[in-house]
Image (cartoon, rainbow, N blue to C red; front, side, top):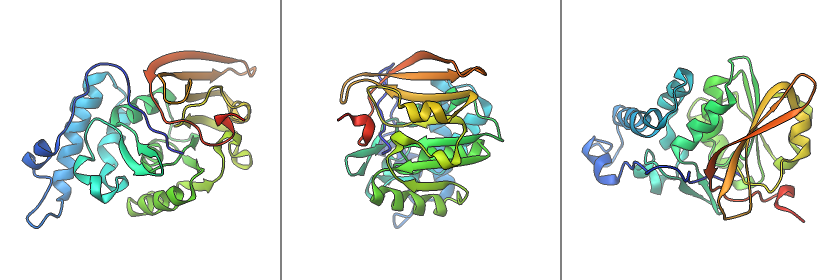
Length: 248
C-alpha cells in the first residue's frame, strides 16, 4: 500500500527524459550505465532534495546511495530520477524523491532504530530506511506488489528488510515496539494500533485527510509517559489506505 504523493509546495524541478539522455543515462544499445545513474542521483539530490531544504547528511547520503531505478517499472526507468511520483501498478505509485527524503528526515533515525513502514509499494522507501536504521519491517496489502518489492530489495542488496503481506492498519504487533513508524497512505485518522506499537520517545509520520484530496502530513511524537503530540508539516496528496483505515 505504498501510496505515494505529490507534494503541494513550491515548483517541481523535473529531470525530463531529454535531460536524462543528455547526462548519459543510456549507453549504446540502450543499457543504462551505473555511473550515469549515479550522476542522475547526484542531480536529484542537489536540485530536488538539498535544494528544497532537506539538510540531514545521513538522509542525503541514503538518497545518493539507493538505486531508485531498480524500484521503478522497466517502462518508467528513464523517468526514475524525475521529481514526481511514478505509477507502479495496482493504482499505486513510487513517491516523489523529495517526499521520501522529507518524510525520512522527520523520523530522525538512529542507526540502532527499529522502523515499521506501512505501505511497501515498490520497496524504495524501505531501502532508504535500511540505509539509516538498524532494522526495517514493512507491510504491503497488495500481494503482487509485495512480491515485486522483495525482488527489487534483493536486487539492491537490501536483504535485511523484513516484509509482510497484511493490512497495515493493525501494524506488526509481534515485532513491536518501534522507534519510528512511517505510513505511506492517507487515512482519515491515525490507526490506534500503530500508536500503541510506537515506543515512548518514538516518532510517526502519516498523511491524514480525505481520499484524493489535499491532506496534511502529520508528525506524531510519543513522550515517555505515553502522551501524543502532533504537528502538521506539509500539504500532500497520497493515494488512500485500502485496508481498515479506508473506513467501513
